[in-house]
Length: 514
Image 1 (cartoon, rainbow, N blue to C red):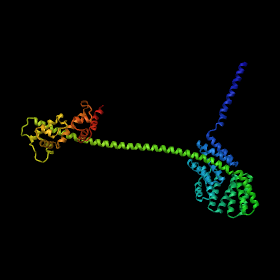
Image 2: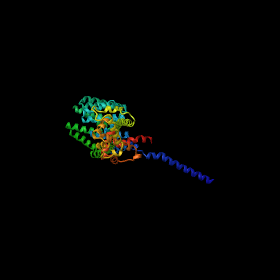
Image 3: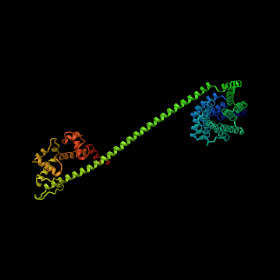
Image 4: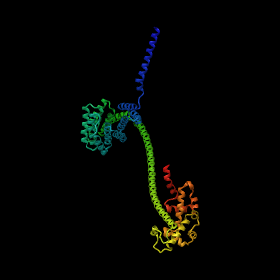
């Protein structure tokens, strides 16, 4: 029993440890294992606390890290909040141009993301900076941009409506209208219990406007009210501004003791809040980050552009190759059609010539009466109107003898075979032989000889099993040509193509059957 009890206690103890381990995994680890997005949000929140405690340098240092982390992890909301806060710190230090740089980035990114609330906040701050810089045109442009936008807080939206009109009136030198709108903004902030910073800033603005109008007593009242209110609430930034304004006003009124006292208070408070050297150092960190980010972005864009240019170049080259290929195919097709037409014409011409020779041989070998004329329609069409040199019978006998000689391949393949050699073999003279060929076939002896030779060349090219695959030099030598070039030129004149092209065309039907 004790053993069983011991084992039961051990199991219970083990279960307890397992439960604690699971509790650690599910509760403790998620708290320590913060995601990158949560890290950026946390940095912005810590910077906001530093800002509210007037630790501007610490806030700026943290915001520089927040911008980097948020940009790296695509936390757009944290990135925009960080940019807006950095711009606000630059505004406190009256570096309005640099503040505009961050507000503009925030505004443009908000437009891209469709975040109207953030767009409105950035636009309102841009309007204030332009007004402080005295840029009336840009201030009016910003006013038009944000007028139709609404902040998430309706009270804040109404307050900025009065504030923006006051700032715009001031930059337009309508000081009375500016005092009216700033007073409306002050009363709205007080009546709706908004953050005291809004009321304090309006007191200082109204005092400055009264001073610009020459109403020193009214200006002094507003500065002192701002001083008292800021001291009660612990608002250091408007308090430092009230000290600065009071020192200047008393100096202009020749109240040196009061001016020196407020000047001393202003310097003491400013030194504690606004350390220019440290501010420039922290600001440099942000500038360094932006520089590195821009370099990285430029490098990325350069690589993308290079890849795009290479892609376009490849596509362009492919299009050029394709265009050349299309042109080549078009020309080849056109040449093929032309060649086919020439082949048909030559084929018809050769058929007519062969038919003429066949009928002539039949006439000469048949037992035909001597007075029966030979039907030679083709000859009569092509013959000249000049009187014949020979009679019909003499011409036919001469043509038969010529055909017998020309059918002997060994004779016509002799490179020295000429019109004189042909005339000698048919027991005639060159004049009669030339006339008979020209009158019958409409061509001279050279063309007549070339046709016989080329016809034999075509026969040998079309029958590789019997004649093999002779080279052009061998074929030219076998057929009586002095060079392959002469053979090729003669073949091209008769068939309209080179011997190689003819050989390919002859093989096409055989290749298709295979």
